[in-house]
Amino acid sequence: MNAHLLKLTSYSNRIEGEMVASFLEGSGIFVMIKSDDAGGINNAMTASNGIHLYVSSTQFEEARTLLEADIIDTDSI
Image (cartoon, rainbow, N blue to C red):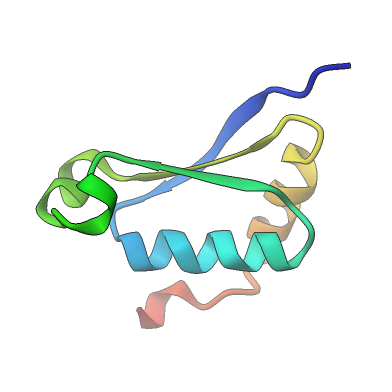
């Protein structure tokens, strides 16, 4: 069975997006970050285009559950 990537969530701040991706990866979930900010060089583009986190369809529910548990305090970023 082929697993497809599904968009899990989006952030307007690259640091926040990478922090959440790191948390998910530490929990055993494959994460792909998609952004249009020239690899972090042009941060002005991040605010308008966002940072999008994609996960495998087979891990989507687990990833969503982890995010809904609100374990990460992203308000302090």
